[in-house]
Length: 408
Image 1 (cartoon, rainbow, N blue to C red):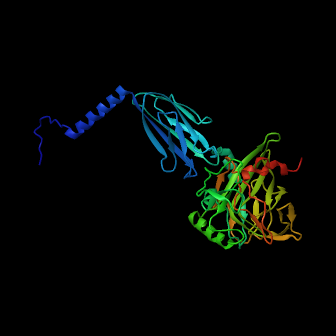
Image 2 (tube, rainbow, N blue to C red; image 1 turned 60 degrees about the vertical axis):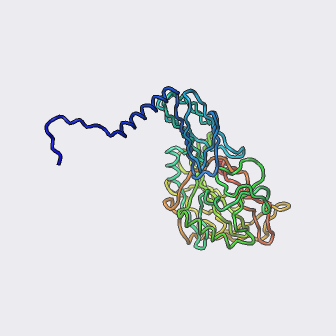
Image 3 (tube, helix red, strand yellow; image 1 turned 90 degrees about the vertical axis):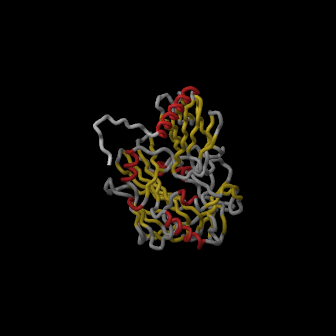
């Protein structure tokens, strides 16, 4: 038991606490004396992981940040520094969308377009600069996102459909990037990502590992099953385009499938549906179908109705109504060729229906990949053709979707 005698009791801190205070004071004094300051550089990427590195210069020594090292803390002498970021490889696409610096003295100046941050470090100060990279471009405004969500399509799949729309990074995780032309290119990236896909015109293609469209087609459903287990929800991409001369808006929705299983067989299948608005009111919809698109006027449908999209089994062509459609298949090989008899594209819509609540809606932008999505296009009875699956961001219907709209 401890009893107070009524006298004032002086409580002294432990000796080790006093030592810690003294050491802290000494360190602070030393920092002031030597002019030491701290600069923290951070890297944030979307989607993560980046699979790429960026180099930072303008300090006493340059360094890199990436998956393994997303942050670097540097002790520097007080003064002015211009931190510059550059891509490590020349063919790496530009994906920097913002630079944010936390600076107690508020005298740091950033230029995202130049990928620089000019920092004025004072003695004892800590400044943190975060470089944000988004492979698919800056985040859209709230109004554009709300509109994209409101008009997002309903996808009606066939009961026998084996594939569903994928996230791009999931598709890339199954591939090897090869230089040259399929099917005999050489591997240049064993783990390509959105941050490392080339944007130079040299020929490259993405080759799904352990499968081939003509000889190993049975392996694609197995690969698809693994992707669906890892990410159960499908992904749909959207892009908003404006036509300044008319004030019209085009809301593009893009779908990436692992494999096209039809008379024409190929890895990767980019298809799309676009909704057009004039003065805020829906004008019509275009549906991608094999070698072109179909224009359908909005008609008497309510302004807040969603596009009903019936997906062809294996082809992933998009139709406004359920049914079987006769299509002519064409390809390029020593000239342009087409089948004499039309083929049947079945889009019964008797399988799963993907409502907007059933999939992730993600904005689509950034630099378009210059190579081929997939290891070539094969036609039954013909073999590999000269056709390639191009990146949607390098297609006319992405940059100028209004060409399909009938004149007023």
